[in-house]
Length: 86
Image 1: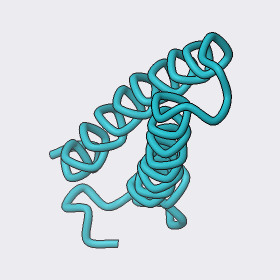
Image 2: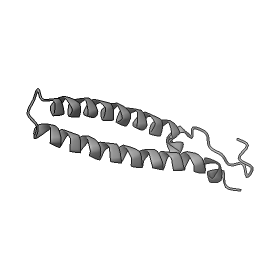
Image 3: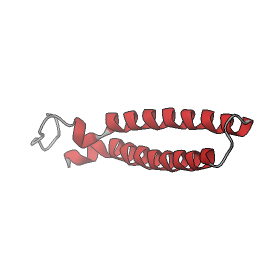
Image 4: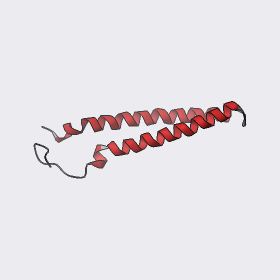
């Protein structure tokens, strides 16, 4: 049995969270582009600004979660045991 097999869920979660953060980053860029094209003080400008703040908060939280489940970064002990009972 491979010790790697125990971490498949964390690796999958890390991969998914990175994909989600990439999507959110692209959305933030899109919102910032839209903000530049809208007149300040309008309802649309305010709405886009609120949306950007919310997306930035979501991005930060997703990145924090990704760091938490990052298996290689959090794997502090070496496992040479065939049963992974380190």
